Image 1: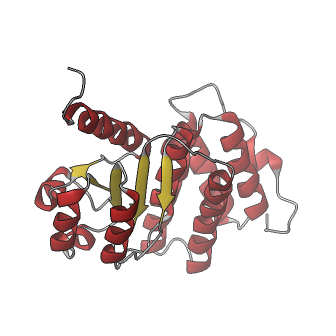
Image 2 (image 1 turned 45 degrees about the vertical axis):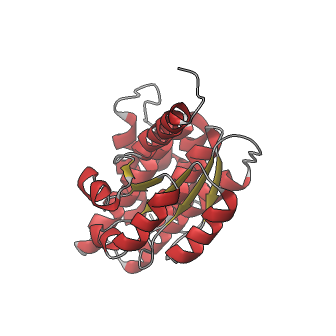
Length: 237
């Protein structure tokens, strides 16, 4: 099969047990990789669209989109995928998330500023996090990859967000800016996320760790806001 624009619906989604909540994620990710291997990009795109229409958004992101991207990265590093294939897979997920992002409008609720620190260019996971935040009622503002922290701090001083989230795939991306992050944490609730984040790194930065999973990160961010509200003078006991 070649990527001739027609695709093959049988290869794309036939046989997937959509009611198997425990196993469908792995099955879909496996199917997406099979389609990527033969460059059947039309069918892969249709399968992702089917995932987003049939599954709860948080489940689709946590059990399909993010694992798919992680496996794509691992296969590219091992030489199993070309740069072109890796770029296409990343763009597929990015485009679908951007479409979801564009359709969400939240004008009330807690405010989150989400950005990647300088040197970090992997911004799809934080984009997914913003989409989930918005669907959970947050006013999420996404600043993307390689964001200068002084610029982000200036925005935070004006906006007074409930939380500032920094996301990075490498531990060094956080620690290289430790002083700036600690300075930001003096005035704002700062949280870190991504594969480079951990409880240990968060402690070194005077920040909070949102965990490994983007959907769980939304719940943890909400807990941070509730704790901050409860700690304010005059809050109901």
